[in-house]
Image: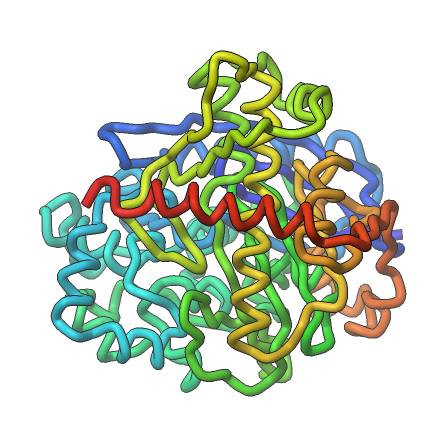
Length: 490
């Protein structure tokens, strides 16, 4: 039996996973890579180190599986900007990560100049440093890269396909393209107006292809054999939506990763812009059929746990957060708004900053841990409430995944806050699984979305408390805390 290999190039590390024809993981390898913070609010990666992590994980994975590889799927951290020289294959600058806020002032200038409506109607996004366009403009404007015939831009998926194909293929898929601020999600092509706004030449942009279909084949002298088709690509959150089998309009998922990203399937017609939320391409199949999604992006959830560990030393390992938070019955009116890189949906406040309120002499590290876990659920409720208000569609249940979904406390708080059941996927790595499914469908390993849907399973379902009084009171108090964090850096 053949396997499909997924390369999940996330924000803090790379995981390569082999999935069997039943959709079950049969092998996995993971490597972290360094994070660089050259100035406050700036976040960078070395694209060469990301590639090194891919090579290392593929090498280890292939050494431990004996099945042939039918296809490769790629999922990535989306908006992160990579620019390289096609002639040398070397990056021209460190990758600017989606979390980076250096272009906040520039985005505010464009809003003040009246460009927001055009941006929202064309791209489905908002003018925020989160997205790729202003980051790429910054590199060009400040002379960090020189644009010529050999210059190539891409998100991390483009960089990895370039390397995997031996420097022969410069592409991306529709989901990643839709996160750049440079793509017209209605016309499904690079937008000349957006490229002109950011003074970016179209010649450096990758070709955009469907998320499921043949992108290229692996070169020789790689950890995997040459000639393996690379046939599925999707940004991490869209890949998770696909891996969670959210194929019906109204189906929704939440991934608790570095940030949390709530996506809802809204069907095959591009919806009108929604205040506080994003419209994005969910995926495009090989026949050209595109599914759209409404998205709420919460910038910091799992990253807040890392900050408690690395910045404050409150915990030594991330796994301690759940038991520590569960050791107290409440946060004792302590609230942590983890706006460490601004606030995303539904606030979109680049000048918000992290805030802890309600501290007393009786506050312990357990209360701060509990407030951190609660913040993950409360931020997600803000997004889901906004989706229901804007779209008129109530989420009937929520499918969840990501590292923090292992915490039953978090899932119970989440269910109580949104008032619907929460179902955790039996396969935790749904982001990787989604890209594997996209690749495997293209190569005939799976017949289509019906087979994927039939294979989906939950390993935990949580029901909400019947009385919403306590949940609503907690949320109301949370909103007060959010107001304290907003506009702090403005």
